[in-house]
Image 1 (cartoon, rainbow, N blue to C red):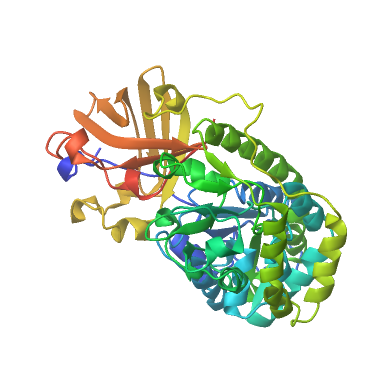
Image 2: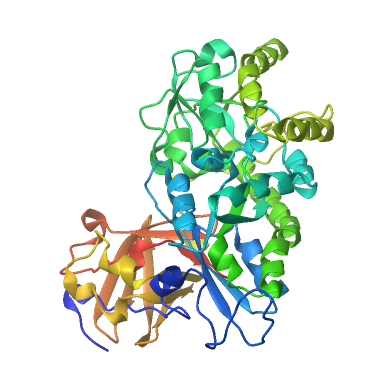
Length: 491
């Protein structure tokens, strides 16, 4: 085992192709050198494709990726790269442009973001107050409405592969409630990409404010966010912001798109697998999303939320105020028919509401529960991510033993860390201890201690460096590769 300064001996398992190489060729890495064009059904063509995903975990697209591999009989594998363009404000637009240029073959983006690059066919899904329940979203995605939306990507050099269930977005006030149109007037309201969202807030009299998701609550009077976002930011919930419980602004399906040149490089069978995966994956994803939403609600209810309701008159006023947004959406071909179809599917059903009555409320925890750490976690870091990380102690960490894939197994006070890539591999065991949100790994075999601050949310483990709480590098190292990307629980 090679010794590195600051006790950093971090190693990772390699991808089937280096991520950068996969991105460069867009279509992935093939298991042999034969032609792989559509129409050439030669066997043995294993292709690995990188999917850019802004989210910290892969739950939004994991079912789709699994379905692709299953439908293609293993000839197409999806390598999900999470935290893509983390910390940026207009990351979806940037990701779409990367797919257009062929910098990356696949991306998962919010469907509402496509009008930022000139595609308006997704706008009916973001129409304000229209798709306001998980059940309606499911019915809409099971209809043929997605075909109209996905077809719009053709004109910008992409193939729309499918839509997956997303999260319902609600108004949350930070300086006051957001229940009636007058509550929005003059307010700075955080929002994510999408011209329909911005136009809606402006129609209500608010000023749209854009910024990284990680700091959505800073410098604004309110926001459009999901319940999951509130759960993930307990420091916001401790201030008891008023949540409009019976208003859903819009839903947020996830669209998966592919560079058309990369798509053309695949066989017809592989293309069918990519196009058919969304329909097969929506059921499992919807079940998972419902379970997570129920869990989120229980946690939120345990935080004593301040729930406000819009009166019937206020709801009517909100809907009247956004009529100009509907006129804007319906200018594009096919959108008026799509909205009419959604309204027909909706009927007179009511929006999903936040209701804590009858819910067993778990105690809110200020400190993490160590028992939650038990299990196996995996993460991946590319050589490029390592080389360009601002977290590096120094250049000694940039070596073949510090990138690829790694696995962390935690059980009964024992830790096992394994790493492997196509240049190096490593396996070491030791013990671990926790104190609140601090965790330390003691590896006696190599005479080293690693320490981090940790947080765990929905099976995603994040490690951070904090010398004030964990210890200086001369005593306790926090190796950079363990910090770059979150870890996903695999069991």
